[in-house]
Length: 56
Image (tube, rainbow, N blue to C red; front, side, top):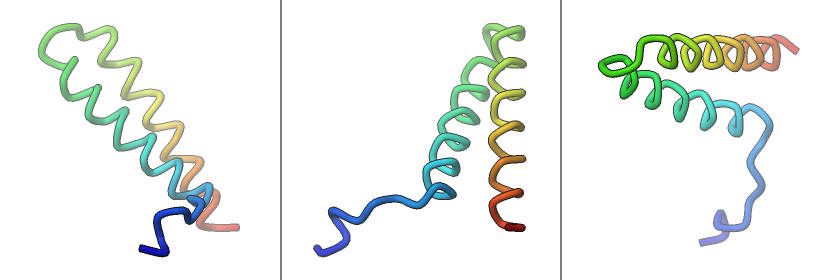
């Protein structure tokens, strides 16, 4: 109950964004290849940001 108002860390925000992008990528992969590739590229950038946060 006390975790309801807890703010997310930067890493947690990025992970949620990454998961959302990957879900969109998967959905688009069967219908629109160009948009699918864009979503995948965005997800890879988010992944790189997560890795840099882990190393810092």
